[in-house]
Length: 168
Image (cartoon, rainbow, N blue to C red; front, top):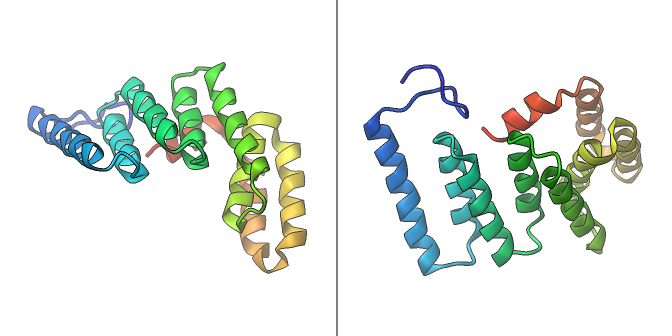
């Protein structure tokens, strides 16, 4: 494998590409068997990204959201995929939909609260995200290391690198 592919910085041989296409086909078969398993869809998204097919990944992520309309991680992932394509109209829409889903929930786990803060950074900017992290710290004083980690991450946040890292 040589350096160059958009996703993993590799060019895949014909055999590798066929093998990955075979995995996608097997996941299609699994989806036919159980359309409600979001893991099948998100796994397909990863394989499409490995092949550099962001449009295919977006199509699959949209299907995942259709069958799991409250799957906030898929909404966020869709935003990341749009952002990878430099789609400045649809990426924020996907992030805002994820934020709305978080708002609609009666309670959030600590991880959901952190994810919400990261989304706020993408949609409303660093100051809003940092304020949210301060708020999280008051509710979860036992999670000071994790909150401080994310506060430090946001201080030197590089949007492009973050999106690339998330989609690996």
